[in-house]
Image 1 (cartoon, rainbow, N blue to C red):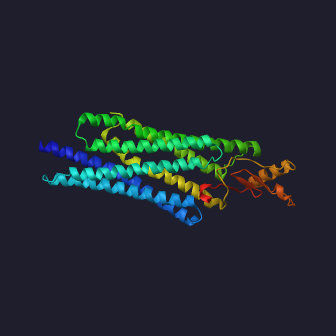
Image 2 (cartoon, rainbow, N blue to C red):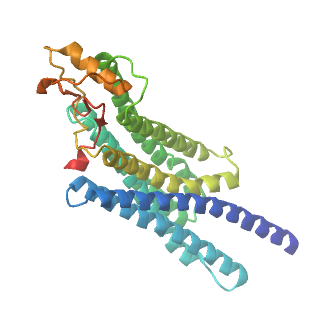
Image 3 (tube, helix red, strand yellow):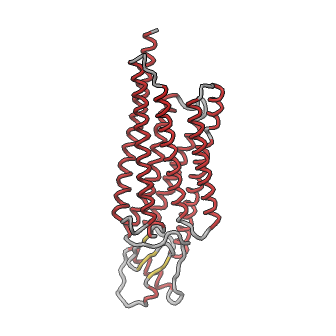
Length: 347
């Protein structure tokens, strides 16, 4: 009996080491990204922009929450190990307290993550009320889902009723479903912006083989959003009994809080780095509109195409009205440079 117990404990310790080692790797990745995001925001200046100040504060709160979650997990494991060495020590009360900390920190980060995702989609459209109403509803859904899940998890952890625990476990699928819906809609809005941008470029400038820096950032946001949605789909599947092994479920449960912190941090870096690269401030939330003067449309379009292709023309003095093609949120100058910046970041 003792040997069987020892074997069980050894297997459990091995699983815990694997689980928390993987979690530690993802936490390390997140820490690096959080520092980079904070550095970029500080470099661009917080006093000049309310949006940057808010993003910096959210980044800081998310870092504190993620660190607190990791500390709570480590302390909980240490309490369990202490009970194995000291048979008189009962860790139940201490574990309940740390379980509350784990739930609060992780669910807080889930909501902050969705807030940043919604903000990113929000600033892309300031002329379409129905999209913003949809995003507000998504935000409310995420808040309700996260809050209910926190209540269910704590009630499940503190409940001794097996029947009640099984019922609560079935209800817990609500949160990942709500978060998946929110992120899917936000990603779909970004995909719509990518399509509109490409369509406008194609109509007004013809086929372009080289992607602009604006398009690259939008595509990065789109691709990362799809990956994040896939993570929540796996999270929903993992709640199905028998879908994942015990260790697989534990590893994924440890990864999810880190992934929910990494994704919004990447969004901050993508947008802030793009603004730093262009060194210009042009509103991204307006509809992409071209204003090519009708007096010399062929000359202007020709100048833009040749500037992007690197072809030099004999210099001449052109009218000031033909020196720039305005894309609303995106501008292409005669030199072939373009710019994109977040509307929220310049306010």
